[in-house]
Structure formats: C-alpha cells, structure tokens
Image (cartoon, rainbow, N blue to C red; front, side, top):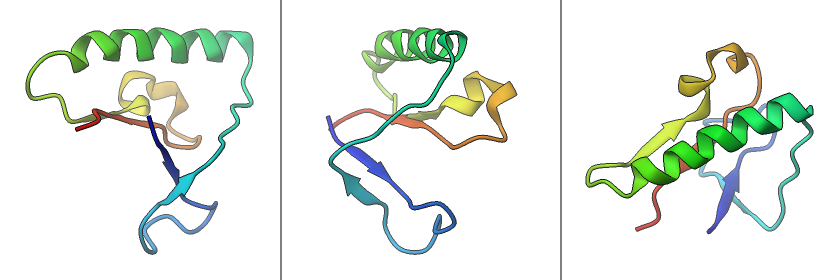
Length: 74
C-alpha cells in the first residue's frame, strides 16, 4: 500500500507527493462510514476492471471535504 496526496491549495499543480504518514481527523460516525465504504471497495476491487473510486461518489454528503481516492494496486 502507498499513500499519495497534495498539500492544501496545490491540487493539480504537479504530481501528487508520496506520503510517509497520513492522519484522519473524524468523528466515530464518519470513521464507521469510511470503514464501510472501504470494506465494500475491497470486494469490488477483486473484480476485473476496477480502477479507482472517489469516496465522495459513495458518500456525497462529504463533497465539501478533502478527497479520498481508492485505487487498485497493479
């Protein structure tokens, strides 16, 4: 597993940076929602053709927050 990201305000300028560490600041409800989506994506990822999913596509109420993208390792 690898983590990548952009510094706030720098999205789209250059390639994302590989991160050594990431932190999640969330409520218990938010963390449970993320965990459920990640568990569902693990199942989907086993199928052919899976590329990537934006969590905001699965959790539309979070569209104003940071973007979390899950991609299948190749």
